[in-house]
Image (cartoon, rainbow, N blue to C red; front, side, top):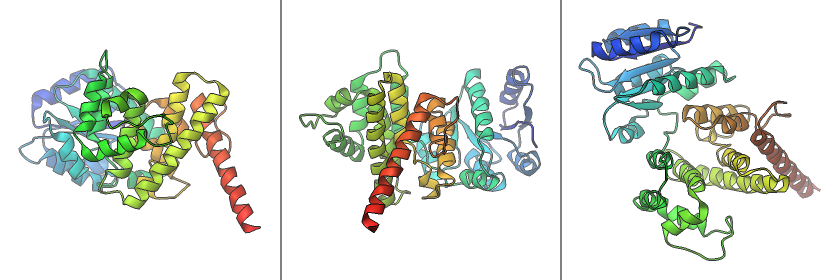
Length: 342
């Protein structure tokens, strides 16, 4: 089915009716299907091939996670979303990897609007059918870390609390040790060392800590990622971020552009967690993951076009900067290789 299509599964007719009323007027270009029976929904998925599948967590006929797990094999390129009122759902998802996204019940209309917008962008990414299926299979995608999501919620507050972010990090001893190790490393260039995580957060700033937590959790704290691979990817990301920061400073760009460019560098190789070192596809896989997780469009664009021979003419500054930094790095690496060969 070429038209955008979404399937909802919930054994409560009231919920389905509310969704139907909510979306029929505002998203007329979407095909929408509503099922109260999980088994009936599964039978129809191959025919409907929805862009998005939204499933309730607790259903009598079949558990929502089980349904999404089966859907991952039936329609692997479908975005799988779980509706849940369970406060511990992120932990369950980390173990099952059945859902790409979790929506908490009750939810606002804006949440569904954002989901459909994100699905449209993901569908428009120029991924091959094979790559889409590979990215969508169960257990193949890294899960956005729970502590990262918790820090995101703190940063969305009107007055984000340094102490609250520090406390979240303090509860995870592995994460705490890595944050302190990095803040005391030559990379950040501070004159004195600290073993106080709250001081570390104040020195680096909330946004930088936010980004560091993400790459530490994904590259070095995820048991599904081989340690050698995680260490290498994180080291490459940190070195590229340093180079991007220096390039931004030489160009005198504003703080917003600098932050977007540095974040893009930190996350440029996230797709390698799924694909390994395939240079033809990891840029698109990285962009797919970042869009799925709701990152800024500037970051997604920069990561998507990082290896383009020439970035798009109308691209954002962060895209041009990341692309240039990778060209410079590639040139330096080629020069070093040529020198070794002589």
